[in-house]
Image 1 (cartoon, helix red, strand yellow):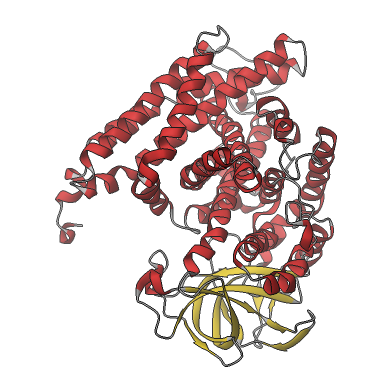
Image 2 (cartoon, rainbow, N blue to C red; image 1 turned 90 degrees about the vertical axis):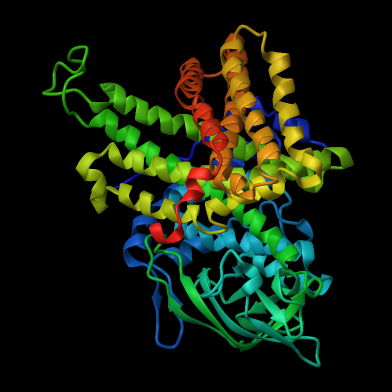
Amino acid sequence: MPSYKAPVEDVLFLLNDVFGMQRYSNLPGFADASPDVVEAVLGEAAKLCEEVLQPLNRVGDLEGCTRHDDGRVTTPKGFKDAVNAFSDGGWIGLAADPEYGGQGLPYTLAAVVNEFSSSANMALAMYPGLTMGAIAALHTHGSPEQKALYLPKMIAGEWTGTMNLTEPHCGTDLGLIKTKAVPQPDGSYKITGTKIFISAGEHDITSNIIHLVLARIDGAPEGVKGISLFVVPKVKVAADGSLGDRNGVACGSIEHKMGIHGNATCVMNYDEATGWLIGQENRGLAAMFVMMNEARLGVAIQGLAQSEVAYQNAAAYAKDRIQGRSLTGAKATDKAADPIIVHPDVRRTLLQIRAFNEAARALVLYTALKSDVAHRGGDEKERQQADDWLGLLTPVLKGVLTDVGFDNAVRAQQMFGGHGYIAEWGMEQFVRDARIAMIYEGANGIQALDLVGRKLPKDGGRAVMGFFNEVGTYLKEKGEDPALAPFCKPLGGALQHLQQATMWFMNNAMAKPDNAGAGSVDYMHLFGLVAMGYMWVRIVEAAAAKKAAGEGDAAVLDAKLVTARFFMERMLPETAAHLARISAGSDAIMALPAEAF
């Protein structure tokens, strides 16, 4: 059976030493997040995830969810109590508005808890995770009455939330949505249509589920300009918050899927269900994108989370499993063979996963801090810069962390040999669970197109130029430091590759858009490597400073320096290959006629 230990110490090192979280104490909620409070919060989160959520991971995978003839759905044994324990601990409202019962702490801490819970039990963590996204959308675009009616119960975990976008004939192209909304004299709407792939669409965990549903009002324009967003509760809610009659929404079936079996992925049928407009008519995508962008960051964290838990188990196995002898002579002379950790290729594999995990975690936390600045900052210029980073890096995080997270789950499974293919060891579940993260909340190819086609040219390229300036300025300031120079130099070369790729698109994609499409995934991964390289240099700076001051655990700090060196020598050079593929253009990709495939 697999195990999991939340990386609390690594997170604290990043927050306190690398990013100086206390420098943000002027932001709302940060003054309450003193180092002692942060350490206590993360310690309690780790305990919940390790002791309550993780033991149910395999249970959920084996049992799955069950739809009954009357449309009810039951979740796996223990899930209801575990989600309620999560809610009762205040974790859903950790960063939510205190006006509606939240604790108002930094979103950054919620991102950390998201990683811990997703590593421990990804399928279970999705129930509260989706609720947090629905809370964000309602908080931003809901009317005062809607917020007062729904948010307190959702923040308390008494009700959960979902997002309903996809229909049988459309996923990415939401302009094709057919679900219709008919206005009623009382200001409500009758919602009719079918949605598919709805995570946590129906379950037995809470008394009500608040669905956020995209639909088209009668007479609305065609395409995405005619889509509106509605709140459609499973059970109708009276003005005083009490529950009334069951609404016209039901689970038609549960999808039989590759992984995350413990989460109810439903076909949802809306039959003149009563709903209420959120925000303005025909502006539903703008409102839903609040939830989608938060969800995309959450999915990026899922990629990291599965990579982390898979790594922990693979590393433990490699130190325990004996097989063959070291190429340089026996190391465990008292045993018939050496532990496989002695073999260079095993170490290469584990270091590749670890180097990703630590840099990806840093990038997630740095971006979460940017989100806090964007939403809580008082300085308009700082908010804009932070929002630029957030918009630019969201598709990079979602695409790169889930692509590589899945690859790393496979790499970790490989460490077990044949045992990795056997279910009882748990590694194949990590592979299956990680796979969905590359697909939902916008498939990764779409993330790459969004990055190249929308985010790069947005505001005249302001965001990407801001990224280049931040990393470039850091390299100029730190590049002469003897402790940092060996790391700054390869990062500088990788940054040049990213800048060259960006210029290549500017010169070759306008007249020939297929060039952008052909190179977009390589560009996304090139960007991700540079961003993670930037994180590694900042980690090295903090680790070297602590070591020089005689602070911290020297062995832990040395391990970070070695892992950073591995990243720079063995992973960052891939930027050159990405640049070469981007520069090759689209001719070979588009040359074959469709019938030749």
